[in-house]
Image 1 (cartoon, rainbow, N blue to C red):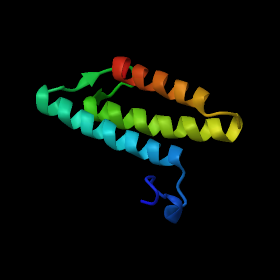
Image 2: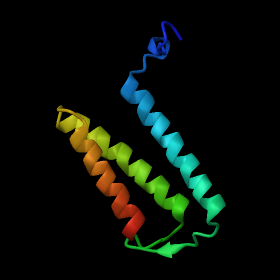
Image 3: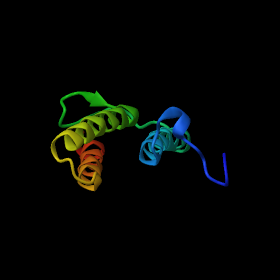
Length: 98
């Protein structure tokens, strides 16, 4: 910490990268808190034709979001907000119907 800000240059990270990983860890922590407060979340047979729990759907949405962002950066080469919007829609889809 230097001058009141974190210096991430030692890892060659950018702030968006750090925010991305913080968001992943926060979503895993939120899922753990949700499971602690409302246990159960039994398996559900959704559109993917497999029985998935909350944790499975979180994993599928995070994994899919990684691929969506890689494709977005590779093809669009514009601001990543469009990819982020697609990722949010993907996560909603997975948790609702997955």
